[in-house]
Length: 149
Image (tube, rainbow, N blue to C red; front, side):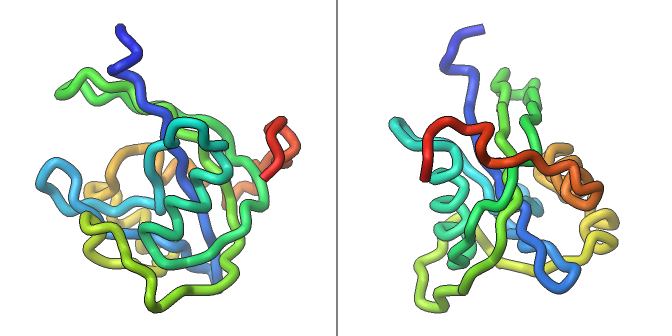
C-alpha cells in the first residue's frame, strides 16, 4: 500500500447539555452524519487540525480537553485507509457569521440515543466508537502530544 492511500484525519467529540455536536454532510453523493472531522494539513498539529476542522464545519470555537484514541477505517471501494485521531473538546462559542464548508448541509446537536438510532447513516463506524469512548470517560491527557498548541 502506498502512502497516497493513507489519510490522517481528526475528529472532535463535543458534548453540551447531553447532546453531541454533529454535522450532516455529503460523502460520495450520500448524506451522512459525522462529528466535525477532516484531514490534517501539511505542517499542522493534530490538535490544531481538530480545532480548525470544527470551526470550518460548524462555526464553533472549541478547546480540546483530551484525547480519545486513534481509530482506523478501510474503504474497500477506494482502497484508502483512514487513520483518525479522536479528540474531546469543550464548546466555547459559536460564530454565527462563520462560512461553513460547502459539503456541510446542517449542523446539529444530537443525543446519544438519536445518534445510535442513525447508525445506518453514520459516515463510518469510527463516529459511534468515538462517542462511546467519550461516554465511558476513556479520555487521555493532551500531554500525550509533544507539540503544544
